Image 1 (cartoon, rainbow, N blue to C red):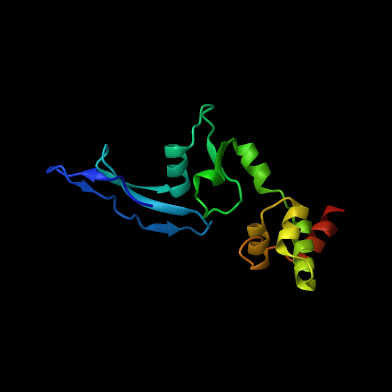
Image 2: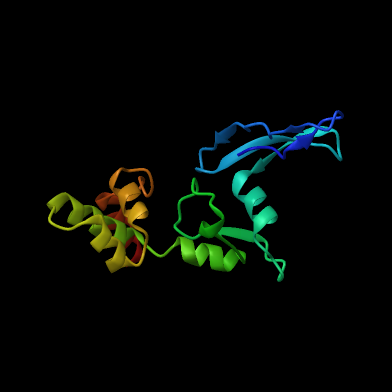
Length: 152
């Protein structure tokens, strides 16, 4: 991301500075920016800055959904304003059984990530992240058996 372009006191246009981000343990990009109105630095989520700047929010919805579920993809077309309930529902299209089934199918081979994404109604990128162990990494067969045994 870049800061806002500026006009110098001599009338020259200066391109905005490249802003370094930090990736949090939850996978979001956070930026440290200077807030002129308060004369101090603030840290804020990149997706929030993009949404506030570029996506109309006439219903004053509180949260931003990454449509492809990739927290690193802060493109305007990948985000939408939503309620907390909607955001949680969209984020949980898969359950633990689905994830284990996806892993089993991938380990057997013969099925593409695109086909699995269509089958489970999620992005191909999410299937790739499950396969790489980037998401749902804490779900294992043993955990599912333990959950079923205590539930019944």
